[in-house]
Each structure stands twice: as C-alpha cells, then as structure tokens.
Image (tube, rainbow, N blue to C red):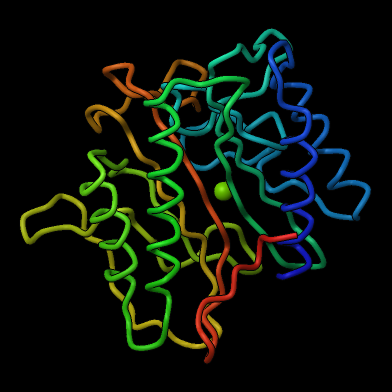
Length: 248
Ligand code: MG
C-alpha cells in the first residue's frame, strides 16, 4: 500500500508542476495516466461505475472552484488565473490501492480561497492526528468537523472517506462530521486498530453544505455556488501513530 500510495503521490507531484492558467483538466489527466502506467499501476477511477453512475471516463477527478468532487476531465476545461482545482487520484498496484487528493491554487488566488485551502489542510491534519490507538472513527470525524466549524466552514455531509485496501472503498466509512441521534445518516463506529488503513478526505465549503450532482452523472457542485476544497491522504494505524501512505 505504501508503494501504491507513493505512485499516487508521484502523479500528484507531476500534475502540481503542470498547473497554470491555460492548462486543460484533460492534460492533467494525461499526466497522471502516464505516471501510473510508467510505474506499472492502474487507475481506480477509470471505468468505475457504482450505482446509477455512468462509467467514469478518466484517471483523475478534477473539480474546480464550486465543484466539490468528481469533476470529469475535459480538453475544453482550461484553468484560469484565480481558480482552485481539486484533483483526486487512486491507483491499484500489485493488488493494493493508494488514494489521495489535493486542491491547488492556479496563479494568484483570493485571500478567501487561500484561507479555505489552509483550513482544509488543517482539518486533514487534525483528523490524521486522531488516527491513534484508543480513538475511534467518530473521533477522526469529529476532528474534521470541529476544525471546519472553528474556522468558519461547513463540511460535505454526504461524502466520506473510506477504508482502503485491496479495494478502493472498504469499511469503515470515515465521515467529515458525526451524526446526532436523529440524523438520517448513521455511520458505524469502530475502535481504531493496528493495521487499519483508510482514506481521510475533508471537503470544506465556504457557504452552505447543500450539494447538487450535475447531469453528467458525476460532478458534484455546491447549490449556492460557494467555493470548496478537498484534501485526502491514505493513512495506516500503527503502534507508533498514524503513518501517511500517500507521500513521496
Ligand atoms: Mg480519493
């Protein structure tokens, strides 16, 4: 899983270096596909078709500004100065999965966009810090929610992190908040144990947390058009604390 995570990190680094105004999201997708292929890894998203969704047609998801997650790369979609772009990529390598996402500035971005990126990273760090023996999944989830709230943001309620292993999506779900007694959401809680591996992925929203899925069957946007950011790492629970698997 560390090798799979490292390949994902390499793909992210190659894309990060290519980000500038005028570059299309399809070009970024091609960069990621090439890195995966060159390392003998396969993309997890390509052809992925859960539930009612059409098969996802690309290696990365590229989600700009008010797009929360699952944006479809396109040669027609070019980055503009001041955008923020969230990129998610996961790969299979020798039977295991690595999964990570980052949101990047395109050129100079507004102060409010900078604050959102920084807050989302802080939320991810806080959730990773809770990924230790003696804690539960709910502690990880609450760390994200608490950080987001303290910094003035809402979180995506419907979309969660997830266990990662031989498959991209396994138990447990790792939400970005924790349900109350009367919630329509009911996440299952687990004690953290050595050897558990999961992706934590805070998705912070500058405005309200209501979301809409576009007609393409994938792209999720904020209903009020507010800005969003998404960061994700795959993490392992060890005796010595959390180990981030998706680093270079
Ligand atoms: Mg991911």
